[in-house]
Image 1 (cartoon, helix red, strand yellow):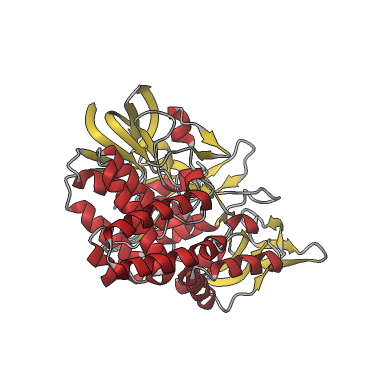
Image 2 (cartoon, each protein chain N blue to C red):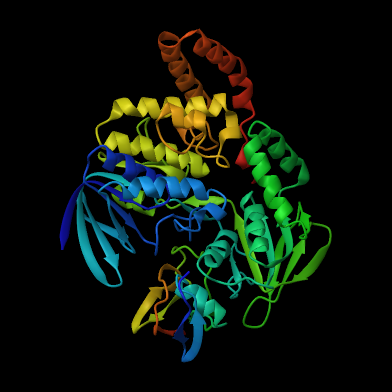
Length: 80
Length: 416
């Protein structure tokens, strides 16, 4: 693990350790990753890039599988 | 952009790493593709050279990745295979970027995922796969002080419970749906694999504070906006347990999407392969969980077989099978994953990780007791020809115990 650095999740600043996945950071921020078509909150299920439940907008790119991306300093994550 | 390699391996778990390593060592131009942030697949997830020795199975990771780094194998991390635009070409994607890669031989090692069975509330945030929860913790999620319930079926629940407990979580309960009678049968079968039994016992000890109940399963998960409690039943009474996270899983299913896309024939949900791991599609081999759930040791052996075969070194495949069998029957599981590599094994000078995978559990045709028996016979025939009398005695001893041994192979289906 490298030193902790900040990222923002829905505008909330949180500090994460190097090597943390974006899905873990979003879970730490206590935010759901997305909402289903009927408006239910959804969060990571499989944790290994299969289920697509952890999709979120990362640095402006929508529908990224957050469990398959490592956090980097200054990263902006938008869920919902 | 397009690139071309003699051997392309998809998936950098144990099977993929083993395949890429031996193919590269044999002089092939190899590319190892992986969808994750770092290599290791699931069982080696989050391992790095400096910390891996602290984890179970970590020494194998160090041995194999060190060996891989000594080759000229290219590792492409974060790429996902999405299409086959032409025969012999894979199309890859990473963060919107597209790249084509041409292969001479393809080895698919995409592993397995958990089987989920739905129940009311299973989509609530906080409800995860047991392995998924473990994966998130390995990816930096801090479980300190979190109450976790694990439910479903299979040995993975115990492993996850142990992992979470040592990371500081409060395991509020482990609920196995299989009845005790079936588990007892499973444990009895494991007597033939003492190291696996010890592994299970160790996991249980680590999560000793957690109640472990058999014959119980989830009725529903409830909570506002996220999981707060889980309701369970044993068929007679129901009860609720408060939790922050619920990890569930009902054994594993192989990730056969890519083999299917390529047109590989599957039987009962697994890719059908021959003795050299070759699928029904020419130049495409499949290894590891794809060909039958069998875990780390099986993946390492199959990866090496496919890698050697892709490099045109079929004759060496026999050596791998022989070594795997010998390790399996001579030192049994006592030289298994907990003590690798053993001096005896190092003396054989084959590969650094002792493997007992050939006779492992699994549904694929070539690891049925019959096939393993045939291989054992072939192996011992060669040994008889080549070996001194000490070797011959060993062979006889092995032959004597083998039928008993094979009968005692644990059958994970018992837990279903």
